[in-house]
Image (cartoon, rainbow, N blue to C red):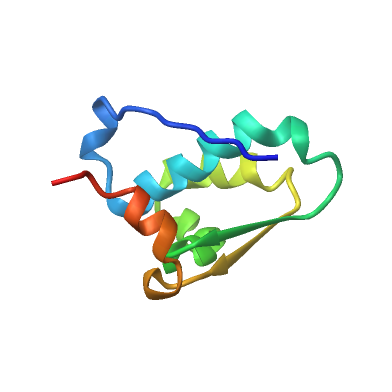
Length: 96
């Protein structure tokens, strides 16, 4: 199965990078959680701070709330650097 999701940022443009990345993860989890069941889900990201969302949540109330919501899912966040993840990286860039 192949699914995709897109969303335009409005007020969220002023969010920090970690907040934007966490919002993207939360939005995707909310949209696709019906497919998870009780199975573990591996999330591949090129944004390494997402791996440490638990620790960062102590400094930011928004991240704390989102982290608490994400804890109900069996997520494993794995870093995949952009150089090793070419296709999604290319698809996410605007055409010139």
